[in-house]
Image 1 (cartoon, rainbow, N blue to C red):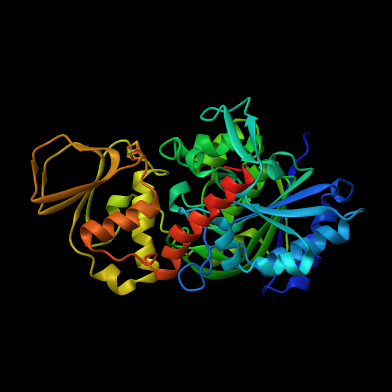
Image 2 (image 1 turned 120 degrees about the horizontal axis):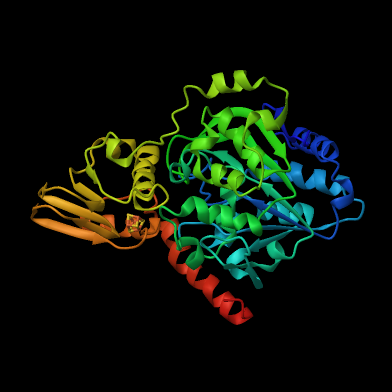
Length: 427
Ligand code: SF4
């Protein structure tokens, strides 16, 4: 009989660094990883965005990383050189998100390096099994590490069929240009391609407070009280899907990763060692609204006409995610959104409306068109940053991201980040 992949679920009720350290130390021993902890050790957390007011819950907490770093240092035979590497999303500079996430304290306390991937020395890596990418460019600290630790936040995500855990974390190893390539109906294949570079040696997932029900950046936290550890990302994500009452076979990136031989997704092939019975966890999350539904079914004043192709990872998902930002952080505006008609994808039928927005470069209406005002947001898909800007300029909708401090981050500090890259020759 072939060896079953093991996934450990640990109960923990608070962000207590000592308790986190103890749990992760136990896991490193359980997976017999002590002899492999040496040299260049890279930790990849999830810091797609962090902000004390509007994105406080959807990133890996610094207390969690404290416990992880202490455990890694304790178990390593020789002191490893530890780097935390990340590329955040939304067109923001990662250095600002490290600061907003509280990671600079980790640098001071533990002497770890913080590496914004876009400002790092880069390497182009050939992907022999890639279906979307034949090669990718990423940070050398990721490509050339001796040991790779993934520290995802357990989250719901409408762009990836409801779940973001270890495999989805790989989108954050890409730079902006490659990150947006095929970020459409191909997103699942794209994510799985990246496992060739981003196949972690150890995974420790922050599910103490999971983030769920809304936009991947701004959604609210819900106490769940678990840390999930594993060495196989497919088995790990399959178990996380079950914890959230999702079927892993219906989550494209898990199914494809399994089909491409990266690991098991059936519970019969996974050994779960858990402090809490899986059924009890499923019972806890049964009433969590993960927000994953067709964009045309979302309950809003917008009339959304959904055309082909349906891009969960592209325009349809991105627009749903944009809407949820308002639901998460501006509930009054959510109830009073102006009644625009929104067309996404190639729509077959007539459109008779006063005001129309067309989302995505391929969007068109094949039937009779009757409208007074229309505008298009281009991109395949458009970036969040562009949606925020164009919907403000053209429709007067002030998104929660439209804040002075984030405008500074997204333009002034982004400009400084580019300058640093040019000066250091790391563009
Ligand atoms: S532009 Fe068209 S193909 Fe591209 S993400 Fe949008 S709907 Fe999908």
